[in-house]
Image (cartoon, rainbow, N blue to C red; front, side, top):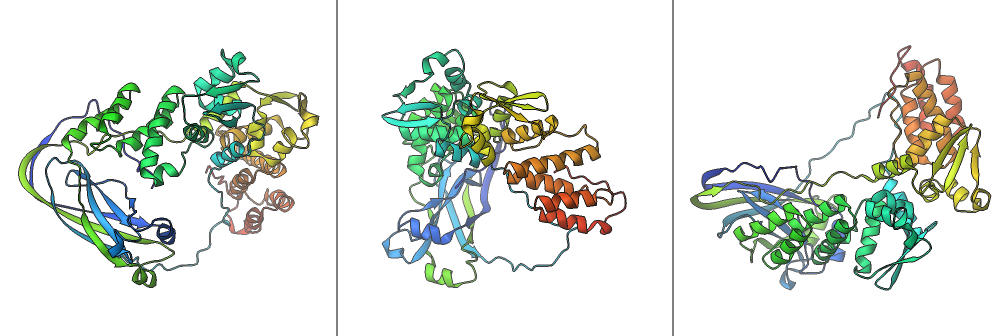
Length: 495
């Protein structure tokens, strides 16, 4: 399961507080099981998936879901257990009830949108660059890691890491040009995960699904992230390790935290002195029979939800109030920003375009990752005609080409705030043509979506012709609905 997003907090200046507590404290947690059949197939009896930690009564808890039962005697059942994660130093008494929730029936209503729906898919920048890494096309640097050869692209490495940038473009460049870079102090699996993060801003799914192996890789990746100045990766690893500390691993992780200045991780290790390691949980070995679940209405679209209610009882006592575990703030994805900065800097550029007299410089591998047409032009069958040459583009305005390049590198359009609505609509039309020409479907849909909100009676005929030429069905439908719009409508979308 992906790690939960945790709100920011300043650990250094957090106020102290205490309270007299006692009696009973209750809480509940919903565990959503998606892809039930897959969990049943992949996890044998005795193996489980942990929920993310959640708080009840000032303590952290988690649920363990066993799709094929806790042990052989319960192999025909789903088992569910509530475990104390961290937060108290003394035994806790608890009453636990777990239920499978029946979702309320949903009803559908036909609604007619003002404009035809143009579905713009989410950003695929990470997917494009992940495919580039896997294909190795245009790779211009080779690493030998513990005997295994891994290929990459210098401009991607430089965009994502200042250390790699110095190594492939800066003062250290001469020692790496045309040579194999040897890395003998890192496992190949770790370096492969590091490269994957550089290209996609994400980590392998195994770090979430394989608990012990994932924690071990996270330790090594944290070291690599610190070495290559990848702050976001370092924080992701730190956050993951915060949730894997127990009495067996606390000393090792504390040493790691001190060596690499991970303050939140260090704080999490110190708090282990106040926690008791759970040896038993509360729950049900025979929670629900799988055959009954699979025939019931509680399993819908291969998904179901378990609700766990817990009531804790304890003695009256004074306790310090503080978060159950330290907060690690992982910043949002920054792949688009890194590549946008690379475009602006022009470092490592290897292809030049002249567009109506204006010169633009770019990187072949990035163009190839984002457009099949650019890929053929700079890496494929058309490469010979462009190698070492200037590519002339005479049928596109320079401002449009600049916006196209910006989208190639960032998966977003530049800010058109200073443009008049009419000029913005014209830009969207030209970009739609460019997107269709270069096989960039997402950009084409974004332009189509914007134009749907800019149609009036004066522009409908022009936009209709454009939609016919470039097979934009949603935009075409919007043109036919023009009579339904208020005359003189000015409603360009900014989304």
